[in-house]
Length: 411
Ligand SMILES: *Cc1c(COP(=O)(O)O)cnc(C)c1O
Image (cartoon, rainbow, N blue to C red; front, side):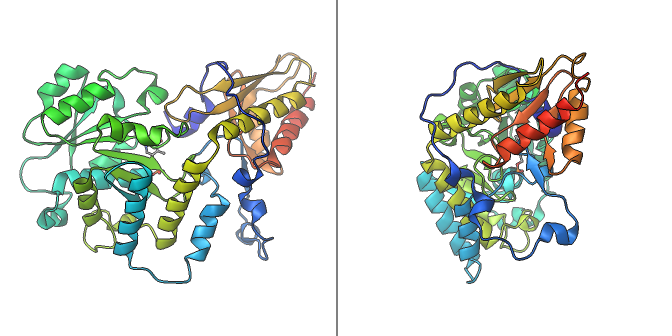
């Protein structure tokens, strides 16, 4: 399923229980653009690019998420001096590892970049000759074990290194599939969210089998915060490498991400990376400012009041519902996506289509084409409105635009 469709269909479970917590003003959390000085120059206008209000989710085609003020501060304040990139990656990585209670960490070009680097590390270790040879290592093609239901679009990042996947179902097949060409075992944590198919091998079984045979494990949890606990969960379980996106709910630079876990593997990943000239990840460079920015984003995310943030999202939904439910037959529901991918509240808006004669897809089209342009999701039955990426002042704008479009179509 494409991410766009995924977001459109984002979850179907009704609200299970609202998080408790005081309703606090969360301006500082969401105030990225309003905290910046008024721009002297309008680059959107200069290039004729339409700015979008994101009432969907963190999607790469929509530029991920908005960087927080503290991330922009890290970017701006470090732009005027040079740094030795080896030193910066080492020191940022050490700090991040300390924050995440793991042996080692590094900043990568997104989770997709981390998938390339982690696999490269498993393939080469510290062997400089092999680093030069990737993706065409001499000898038999190396293998990465993956559950059949975990194959997904991002696995091409892993295949970039020249490996082939061996698909397995259940612990017994996994055990039997391991041989002298096996270099890694990959677990897609969000598979259940994307495909609705339960894992045939649990996390614990997966790690235990791989460990028994001395095969490094890698878990892709790119979109799997909130909850914040997930940033600590998989190293505790024993996974050797873990990745999260920077440009999703951690709200760092869209082109950055985290790779962390076992020290020897992270060190090997660094050797396969820029600023070295030859290796496979040299084209996946992350600049100095983004490394500082990713560190600042993670720090901010870990220090945030997550209950208050959750409550703020629920309050936004309530606020939009109150405006929309003034219209005849309109019904608003809070949906809590069970995760692990994109596990946050969103809302579903439906109406009697004989009374308001427009379907959700037409509403999303009108929202996108209107001014301001708003991106929301529309299935067959209901409109899906995301609230977690809205700036505070956009909550009413989105509610009123939807109301306007529906109102025009009352029969
Ligand atoms: C978004 C995503 C990626 C890619 O992450 P980037 O940081 O954009 O490179 C990889 N895997 C999963 C499961 C994702 O959701």
